[in-house]
Image (cartoon, rainbow, N blue to C red; front, side, top):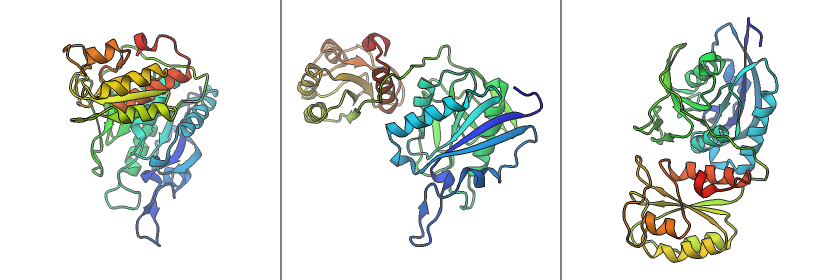
Length: 325
């Protein structure tokens, strides 16, 4: 890598950070601004060279598994160049946390991948678009941020992809991570402060397309009909979002048993923002009951992250998912 310039590749996918007002509706259209237009307003340090690629121009509610594969492949292609210090991905905030975790699971490179976006359009008063993008580029250029996996930079805070969550629909402080795991660090202007990093990382080589995996949220009195239906229409995996330590109503168990008989992988997660799924109670519908019928315990991350991980493991032909999840 050249000493005089730090080369960062910006890959844009659309979202609010690339949105502009549609004069016909008076509302914002996602993906209307190109990456080159955005980057012109970032006033980057002179030692950073930016190379911009636009891969999609989508609102992130339209992102698909196929888009994730294309994005991952583009990043891997970019990283074939040893002169590249890091990659920044701009993304809509609706599904940003899922995309970031997918990249964390599938990009095995020490160089940083930073995912960012904005809660306010570049044309809105008080926009966070340019500061988030500028600081993400500085972060991706930094040698301090190697071996941290995929990160999310938002509102000066650096989050681990595995535990980042969108926590506000519109406020510029739109993302958080669990109290248990906290921030990786923060950036103050151009100064980067890294406080912690993961003890270990896990990455997978995809061998097949990402399969259909569905999330089913369980609530008071839920039955197993949606679980049965997901299995019938071809889901290869189902993530249940249960109560507390990983409980569901006993009525759900019938659908779970039928899904597992069809060969569907079922995972139980918790709807609580903190804490592990754990075997604590022995009554019907508990994590203990689910586990004894072949359900995988989803541990301490939410249903959306569990869905991404299960899809990745299935596409990687990972053996012993039950033990490794």
